[in-house]
Length: 93
Image 1 (cartoon, rainbow, N blue to C red):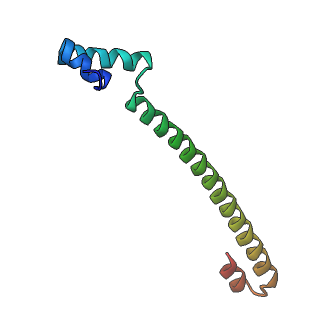
Image 2 (image 1 turned 30 degrees about the vertical axis):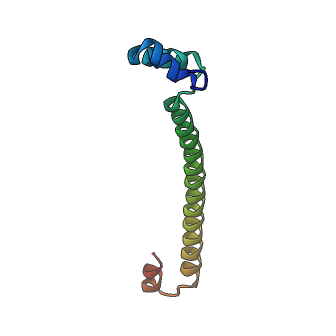
């Protein structure tokens, strides 16, 4: 019994239900890491990073759309200035 891990001694001396209770109490006390809690923290960290990246991409796309709208407006103005007839002006719009 001396060379066995502690959890084996608990199961041998107190039985499986006691070992499960011991495990859960040790996990709540922080002695044993909670895989679910660590996974949850990791997911939240990745979610925050993904949200920040999504916001940055949205802002970049909005800037591109604004630039395209401004370019279209300037091209329309140039077209209207270059048009000599009413039909040419209608084609610019």
